[in-house]
Image (cartoon, rainbow, N blue to C red):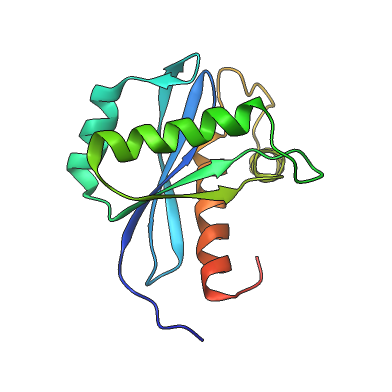
Length: 146
């Protein structure tokens, strides 16, 4: 098994209205949700992103890559990649893309089981989806099952 490092990672679930955020590290292979970033047509308030970067000082960004179920890319895939490139351009911190297929569906199922009433427009699961994306990426890096 590869040796784990202690890099701190910010994970993102890219969306056009909200961007889910999670923080995690490689040592524990776990993540926790942070407040989502409001976005306008996929563009976040970069001041809020800068505050996250200043507060957490991440070593890496992981951005969810929304692929079609057959593995092909879509317009949202292109936009998520662009978001990752902008993160790197603004902060000089490397980023990796992570397959996020099924993360929102799984996040909604977890939220329902915890008593969520199903109004995802007002009470989204973006942070939980970001956690699932980041923890999935961490598991993949260690060769562990998800």
